[in-house]
Image 1 (cartoon, rainbow, N blue to C red):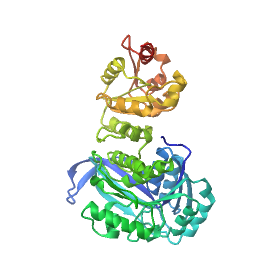
Image 2 (image 1 turned 120 degrees about the vertical axis):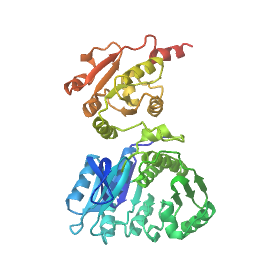
Image 3 (image 1 turned 45 degrees about the horizontal axis):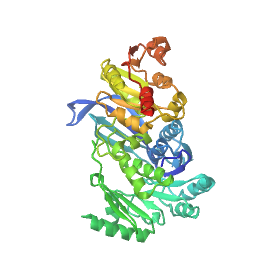
Image 4 (image 1 turned 90 degrees about the vertical axis):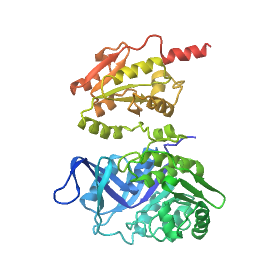
Amino acid sequence: MGISEKKRILTLGDLILDIYYIGNSNRISPEAPVPIVDINSINKKIGGAGNVALNVAKLGGESVLLSTLGEDEISREIIDILNENLIENIIYKDKKTEGIKKIRVVSQNQQQIRLDFERIKYKNIEEILFSELETITERIDLIILSDYGKGTLDSCEKIIKHANSKKIKTLIDPKGNDFSKYKNAFLIKPNLLEFENIVGKCQNDFLLEEKGLGLISKLNIDYLIVTKGDKGVSIISKNEIQHMPSISRDVFDVTGAGDTFIATLGVFLANDYTVKEAVMKANIAAGIVISKIGTATVNKSEINAHDGQSNFSNNKIKEINELRSIFSNLRKKGKKIVMTNGCFDILHRGHIEYLAKAKELGDVLIIALNDDNSIKILKGEKRPINKIYDRLKIISSLNFVDYVCQFSEETPLNIYKDLSPDVLVKGGDYKIENIIGAKEILKKGGEVKIIPFLKGYSSSDIIEKIKNF
């Protein structure tokens, strides 16, 4: 079972602009006992409900966002990010309100301080959101309410009632001391602290189950999902109770993990996965995203590659937008970046020796893989033998490969234009003038290297041998 590109998921909730000042800290200020951080990059990302909508889009859903903003510079920057990521957005603009901004200063992969800029909460806007919702409901497969307690979802009973009348599942990422406004939703996903804030302390899973069933009855919801950090996830319903363990991982930043969890849950539920199956996928996604710095997203390939695994510390599978940031940081450290591409359908000794030699040409090796549709165009409908998530996982397991990504075009030209590695490597008997991307790399001062393939090894030959066996 896979994810359908056609499922249309609506996210409602508060929008936040997350700004990261990233630098190095090697000394203490003479003015106060605080570290001095020399800033070398500034990253702006969308947070709150916007991060949920972005995660939905990255997971292959058709993402729609309904929210509120002011008419200030912060609000305009948020809308620009939504448009850049092709997220359909319906925004009510309140002239009396300023957009919400959170600034984080990060050094050595650790937050040093967070600065919040919030002015006026949105008030009494349910009717406005509801009127917009009515116009698009017929084209929506699932609704996520991402409540950050900033006022957009202070009252959402009417929205949930309307969704139920249309038989659309509503998932809630809750906030605050009163969950009664979420009555009759399909599913509510608090973290343990939020859950205990409503029902009281739960010293063990038995108490969590008892109080969870009580909350389900009180709110008339189908499912309660409680995320418990390193203690795992609990699924509670009238007919099903299950406690899933946490996933072993390197934790760099938990910012936005809840957004990734609820977005993943929504995408897989919209594609007819069971709640248990969708929670398993969401648990994997959250485990991946906390190994990244800042407000981040997860894609389908990452989830599929890690599915069923217990260790996320070797997180090499990246999207192109992630590699842009990685390339920038590597260049600041003076690292030489080597890149190559290919199908790598059936990995054999020839591939291994070729990639090992490619790594020797620099400090960091990145592999771009043709996705399944791209391979079909190049090699016919019966290929590939191994699907993209299998190939990503296999290639990323090689110790001399640092990062791996995928591309859907017939050639990797756009990737090379975008990323501009220091060295482009190809295998075989190519001439430099015939290598895709060579002209662009050379023009920017890079190198192009050709490594002869080991004779007697090819995926096509192996496939023929198997056919004739």
